[in-house]
Length: 226
Image 1 (cartoon, helix red, strand yellow):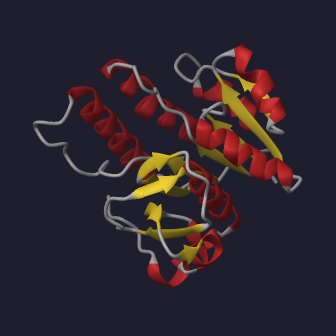
Image 2 (cartoon, one colour):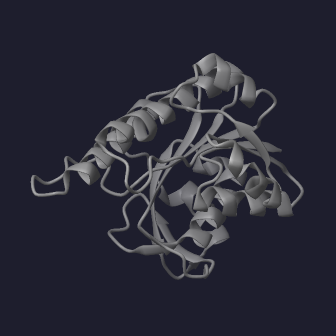
């Protein structure tokens, strides 16, 4: 299996790259800065320099040829303003989906955010509100696509604590924390399981082993309406 990850130098992406490489799979990461290439190689991933804010869908699709899955794990990041929430958190996710369709890559995972379906409250910090709106707009676009076997994953508040391997993974979990280790492990399990397609899921720490939580999706998870 070959997986291409947008935002390949992100904290969750690097963890997922290590997990995929450890089991002998091909993994590539799309990165904006060439100086990040060695970090990807250290994680066992092929670095591909590709700026999603300036590339066309056709250009990105060339990097997805022969891939079995694509993962959108990019983000404008702390310190960015409202403009880059639009160009990265929304537009780049849509661009990767367009490219996946052009390349014939059906399996498509998105790392999104809790609260992305709701209009932010009036007193929310404006840049974070723009981030949630951008994530929600991207998710809505992707959920309308019939040519992608998409899964949208919405983690709770991210921590750098060691993963426990136990989570709560449901269409609605409520607020909570989750380690980046466990987010990466859940993404790995979701890539493996076709029952995870076409569902929007929230993720927080819990008591259920990750493999069991993903296996239970076939009987319990339901698609969140557009």
